[in-house]
Length: 77
Image (cartoon, rainbow, N blue to C red):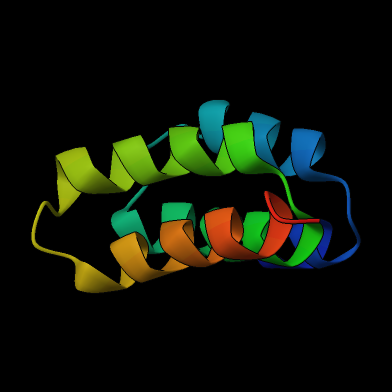
């Protein structure tokens, strides 16, 4: 669901879905949100998702790459 809402461009709803889940979100769910943030240029929300990923899986190299891609793509434009 987070992926569908994120791809539609409504990242606030995707973030609310994660925060209102009855169980703790896994790093994969936060990665999905981080990927949507990369596609849409949401730097602040992407940084928040990155922080949650870093807490859950500190050795997850993909999250560092996604965050750097957000910065490289959207801060230049």
